[in-house]
Length: 503
Image (cartoon, rainbow, N blue to C red; front, side, top):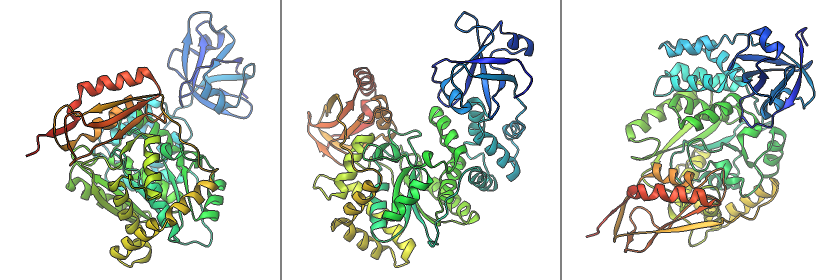
């Protein structure tokens, strides 16, 4: 610890998400001597740890001079409790911010500059606003191929990597997202691992959607495991279904994903680097990427999908991983459920081969599994389809899924929502289109994904012919306020379902 005047820690009990905030009274001798003002970046130190934090200045008697308040995340990262002693000084310069400014002015970044940015983000040296600046300036095709490759490698280098002894081929599957109810991953993993493929699947939480795979699976079993736990599950079952954030494979990406969620932003370069860096860090050698295409999907046209597919393949090749992109129909929701619990219901229905299982979710899962099996065995898609269907229809996939669930703590009973409301069709006709983005927005306004039971269950989809008064969907929430908010949004956006009088 330095010779600076010590300050006594006060636990403020304030949740500032992942951004550490410190609080000092304006008359604190340290605050005055150092010339600190609101939003100053400061270095808070103990004997064993240093923390960069943003300062908020207190002007009333909430905090006494000689004390420093810390937000919850600041306490956690610094490893202190109320009454401990720390010292404070001006934060050192973060030199990689100069590279962000370089990018803002339109210049390309070298591998070394990408490395420096990712390392500083991973080490919590960037404020949220600085991460947001980097993400924004990299969005919208502003990263060239070399920069995307450099970003991918930089993300890998600042995290952990998993080694799989005596297994040279590790498989994975990923969807770029943007399509409600497209929860194929658990089904594909169950089929592929039942076929003998090793597939240690780590998934993300939602960025811009009503549920990520990890959000949905968390309603069924535990998904928070470190690398040791992940390796144990794979040894026992040949697969796992865990949350990538707990494995810490790409800590810089995990921090950026949180900001992307707030910005509702998912730039293509960042998307590719995020996906492939985690696959590489997880030890994957072969991966299938699902790219849904539709007017209201994340990727709007086949030309965009082909371009993105080409980038995935070139970056994968440069980074030593074999990538196969599968371009799929993104014109409509895939499952009947949207939101964590509702999507979990659909997963179980498909795996159990129940009569009411969503047809499109089953079909799409089989096609992606077939591609993964063909990538592994090189026997052709037709044989891959046949094998995948046999594994699903025979119950092997359901048995394998239960085995994975057991290794991850056992299947849970799905919770039920407190509030529901059925929306009906006001006029007869055929559903010609559904706006995926606004449908996802509706589920989020109901509380998904933070509220696991919140979401939507579709009773009709594109192509359904309805009579006036027939149910369109049921909206679920655990909060009357969020339910009312979502219903008001639907009243203002009822045209998210395009219903045309059938001939």
